[in-house]
Length: 162
Image (cartoon, rainbow, N blue to C red; front, top):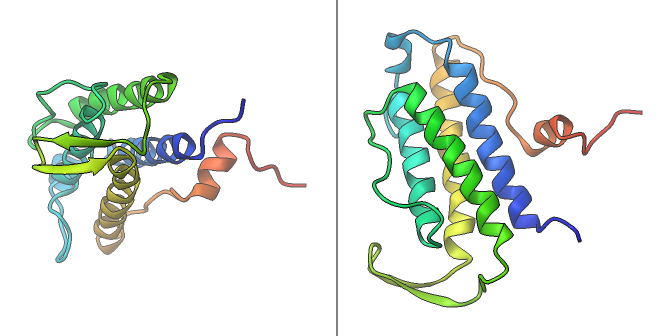
């Protein structure tokens, strides 16, 4: 059976966040607090925000419990929680019981939504904020890694040069 495209998209999202976090682990404490106009906040806070949001989206399906990560979390805690997110993504797609077109009453968000919506937002949200971190890095003369789908596909062996 083929891998669902949405699962591949979410795997890319988690991989890209992990790759960028790996790059930023070598930054100093001061560098992790860098920010730029128009971005969410510091590099560290933006990473925590990405992972916190991922936990919230996955909580919709019951694969990640509350409490979610704090925005003041350390890089090590962010990495640990990102690993939990990665496992939860796999767990979600192992379940054959989820009808992603079904509507759900979401008390936390105060909306009724179809279950595909948090999955699409998962990837969009992460991409948006990783781009902001990349902007902060490059504006401060620091290199940002390639995080696009092409880079992920190469890392996964889905693209081979000939």
